[in-house]
Amino acid sequence: MHSIDRTSIGGIAAARIAELRETEAAAFRKARPKSEAKVGNGMAGFLGGVPMHWMTDWPTPFPILVEGAKGATITDIDGNKLDDFCLGDTGSMLGHSPPAVARAIRRQAGRGLTYMLPSEDALAIGPLLQQRFGLPYWQIATTATDANRFALRVARAVTGREKILVFNGCYHGSVDETMVRLIDGKPVNRPGLAGEFRDLTRATKIVEFNDMAALEAALANHDVACVITEPVLTNSCMVLPAPGFHDALRRLTRAAGTLLLIDETHTISTGPGGYTKKHGLEPDLFVLGKPVGGGVPASIWGMSEEVATRYGAYNRTKEPGYSGMGTTLSANPLQFAAMRATLEEVMTEEAYAHMDRLARRLDAGLTAVIDRYHLPWHVARVGARVEFICALGPLRNGGEAEKAHAPELEAAIHVALVNRGVLIAPFHNMMLISPATTAAQVSRLIAAFGAVAARLAA
Ligand SMILES: Cc1ncc(COP(=O)(O)O)c(C=O)c1O
Image (tube, rainbow, N blue to C red; front, side):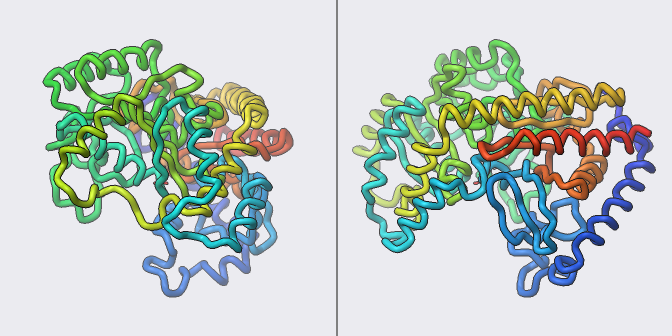
C-alpha cells in the first residue's frame, strides 16, 4: 500500500486537494442560491441545524435541499438534477419510490397505518422470506440496527454465553456491543462514542477480517455466543473475503458452538437472495434492513430450525416477562404492504441482472480512469455496489481499510462530482446501481470521475 504523508493524500498533493475543494465549494453554492438561503445557516429548530446529525457530515458546504426523487434521480429546490448513486445509503437501492411500492403504500394509506395486528400482506411475506433467504422463521423490525440487536439477544439466550465477536472495521448500525475497534492490535471502544461509559471490549471480542488464525484463537474458549459479520466488509472501504474465508468461518463457528449471524444490509446488492444465497452460506441468523421495504423503514431477521427449537426451549424455562425485543411500530401494515411489493415486484432476478450489468460497466469505467492517470487507487465491487478507494488494493481487513481512507481527498471528489451532476454516498465512496439506473447515468458518472481525476492528476 502506498504511504500517506502530510503533503500527499492518496497520491495527490494536499495543496491541489485543498484548491479543488475550495473551487468546487464555490461552484456548489453558486448553483444553489435558494437552498443556501434556506439551509445555508442551518435549519431552524434543529439541534446543530439539521434534523439528523449526519446531514452535516456530507462534504457539501450545506445539505442538498431535496425537492423530490424518482428512479435514480434527485432534484433539489434550485432545479439541479443529480444522478443518484448514493440511493439513501442503500435505503433506496431499489430506486426512489419504485412504482409497485408507491402503489402499495397508496393502497394501504387509507386502511390504517399501524395496529399491532397482521394484515393479509403479512400472510404472503412469511413464505416469501422462507423461499428467498432459505431460513424457516422470521420476524419483522423497523431498522437493521434493531434486527441485529434482537438476533444477538436470541444468540445469547440460546447459547447461554455472554460474549459476541465482531471483525475490525465492522458496522452493524448503532448496536452498542458492536462498537469496538482494534487500535495497534488492542481492542478498545470505538473512538468518538457519545455517552458510552461501559468497556464494550469486556463482552465483545474483535479480530481482523480474513484472519482465520485469530478467529480460531478467539473462539477457542467456547465462550462466544455469536459471530456477527457482513459477508463482505462494506463499511470499511470494501474488503472482500479471501478465498475460503466463509467456509472456514462456518467450520470454526460450528466447532466452537458459536452461532453465525450474517448481516446482508449492504450485500443484498449481490442478488435477490443476497450474498448468502448466491454463495451458499449457511448462517444461523440472518439480518436485512434498509432496502427491504423499498424505502419504507423495515427490517427482517430470520433464524434456522435449530436456533428456533433452542429458542423455544429457552422460552419455556425463562422467567416470565418482557423479552427486551420489539418496538411498537414494527410489523405494521404499511411495512407489510411495502415489503410485499418490494419482494414480489421489485427485487427480481431481471432487476438484479440489469443492476449487475451496469455495475460491471461502472467498475470497468472507473478502473480505466484510474489506470489512465496512474492513480494509486482501486475499485471494489459486490454485485450492484461499487466503491473506489483512494489507495492501492485489494484491502485485506479493517485495519488496512482504516489507513486507506483519505477523507480530505474523498470530500473534494464528492463535491466535484455533485457539481458535475452525480451524487455518491458520503463517508465512503459507495456507488449503487438500482433497477431504475440507466446506462446513460453510468456513463455520466464515469465521465465526471474522469474529469475530476484529470484535474487532480494534472
Ligand atoms: C451492514 C449494516 N448493518 C446494519 C446497518 C444499520 O442500518 P440502520 O441504520 O437502518 O439501522 C447498517 C447501516 O449502514 C449497515 O451498513
